[in-house]
Image: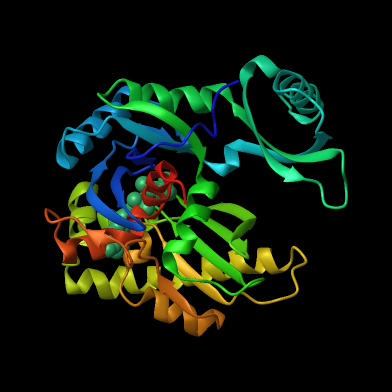
Length: 351
Ligand SMILES: Nc1ncnc2c1ncn2[C@@H]1O[C@H](COP(=O)(O)OP(=O)(O)OP(=O)(O)O)[C@@H](O)[C@H]1O
Ligand SMILES: [Mg+2]
């Protein structure tokens, strides 16, 4: 089987392959403390990643390699993720008397019954979660499956650089790993984390720190970038640069960014309505916004007012030491964009 979970050692680079850019985060651990040693955000051509698929492996690996140079050259191993929309997860209950080989066979037999592809086109992995409650002979098994191409295109992009791809994770697991870095949550509390990227808005909801809901919608910062391009003629790379630096022309901010900010709030509110209509009784106790689009100034405040849930911009590095080479102010601005890459880098450590 392909390792979607893999083994644990230290010091892997989290590599988030987004549709507009590749983000790299390198963490190290001393005692219980984490440190961010380096990171990079490298733009991708629009042809590289389309609808969540790596369409051009060469363009992606070029960007990773450039990011690696920005980070420093000592890094050797990487963790990447497939989008949760490309993944089927299922909990199985299987006898705890099976040997490892028998278990693997049984997982394949059960997987074949609900996966809509031929098994040889599919990458499968599983993890034994523990005994089924009130059962002495059954273990709960988490099965994760996705198309082999979705895994191999990402592995190939990494392996074409000096990095070796250690693990292909799932992006929801990266976000789940990130959650304890943001704050300690009360048992049972529902917490939302919405990732608003260039082309996709993803709502993740966690209960007691575990993912219970995930849904993507097609919406993101590209709409704003395109509008600015059409009305003011700036090219996309220039616009992104100004946005990240926070120095877009005041007229553009008034005419386009502010109305767009309102539509981001509407989209998130819509995503939450979908979640609430899935039958959940209680309200979210907190909402975190991540992804580049979360960098729009005043977005969290406006969102909190509209949806009535305490809302904050995600900063995965609030309780993390910052390496001497890094600019703290710059990192704070880039932090929401680095959320997924940070969750992937955290895969390196036993918690
Ligand atoms: N400070 C900012 N203010 C507003 N928008 C910003 C800011 N910084 C980045 N963006 C926008 O965020 C988007 C990039 O975010 P991100 O890197 O999270 O996307 P991605 O991961 O490449 O895309 P996706 O997750 O949708 O595949 C771009 O559309 C960019 O214009
Ligand atoms: Mg993204």
